[in-house]
Length: 157
Image (tube, rainbow, N blue to C red; front, side, top):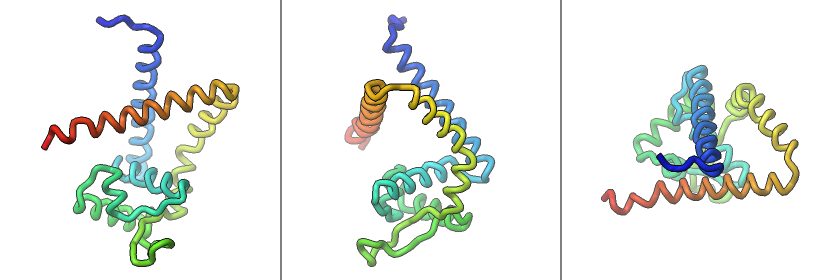
């Protein structure tokens, strides 16, 4: 077995954290009669809105790795549940974009708010250098995971 140095301990801790966050998200989905992909879609839509971006159903589906039929089913399901709505784009009125309803945001905050609050509390215990290191590490891991997800795509065809 490979030497378990401090770097590998952190990698394993990150993996365990990812598993726990996934389980927490699955509990939210289950409690609210949703599929885990529904939750991922709502997160993608909220992240886009926070970044000032509008997502069409096609862009949402691409972000989630869904085909056109799967994306349509997803958006229809979320719309029927009152979590999203289809509206004309602000920048391009010809486009139809998907937006999260306030009800879904409130539902998410009611469930995830305590966890988010605890995470923020933990970060306030860190100084700016520590927060910068955490940010740099998480951004690097996120980029590495995104790249790892695309590395094998050319070979798969």
